[in-house]
Amino acid sequence: MDHLKRLRDESPVLYWIVLLVGFWLAFRLLLAVAQVLLGSFALPAWAPLALVIAVLVLLARRQQRSR
Image 1 (cartoon, rainbow, N blue to C red):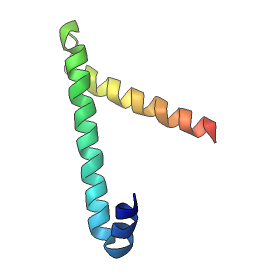
Image 2 (tube, helix red, strand yellow):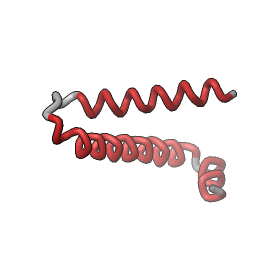
Image 3 (cartoon, helix red, strand yellow):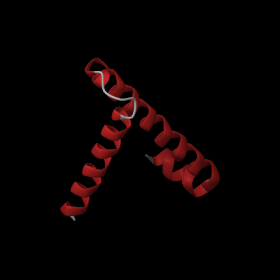
Image 4 (cartoon, rainbow, N blue to C red):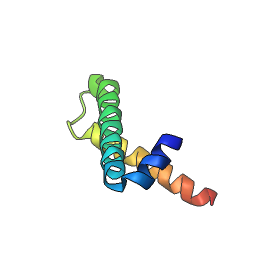
């Protein structure tokens, strides 16, 4: 974490690029896992995306309530 704080202070543009790429990769990984889990149920192609977004929304709402 100290590396990220130092990177944020020294080079904010690079920090935001690294952060955005990290979020994108994490989202793609979640989507791939959802596709593997839901693949055998013969659901439409958009079902894994809907599942990932629904889980992220539920997590965000849970965090909002905890404050």
